[in-house]
Length: 160
Ligand code: ZN
Image 1 (tube, helix red, strand yellow):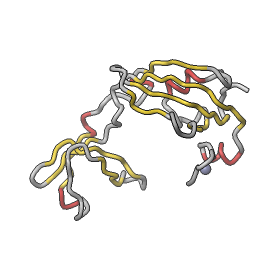
Image 2: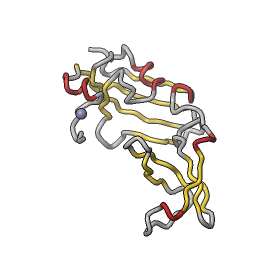
Image 3: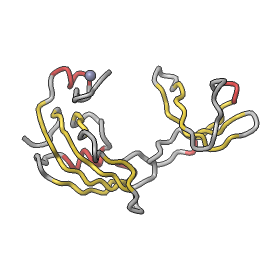
Image 4: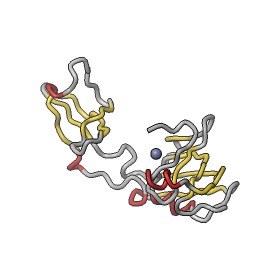
């Protein structure tokens, strides 16, 4: 069975930056299970995997417009320290979960700590970066009706 929309795909992957530094990898752990065709992984990788079969290896460089997008400076903003949790000692590089305003949470990275506020960046940490993936397809199966309804794979260890 090959990789197509509405199939659950297990992959082993290594993600590197332009400098060869490993950003993320499934090595030593479970493969990553995802539902193909539902935007669970970046579009460039999804495209590269379409039609591949178990055992195939894919090496692909994904540009930012098919990865995590371009940086948007309007997504950098200031948050008054009074709206941070009392016990939090803000530091540069710290990741906070903020309320997205639509009921979800939005991870932001602290860029600067000022006297009464912190400057945070809501851009994805991999925005603007070209992503170099090495992927091996480990398994492909049809998704269940529930998985398609939920828009994600129910893999080992999955919880809602
Ligand atoms: Zn689900």
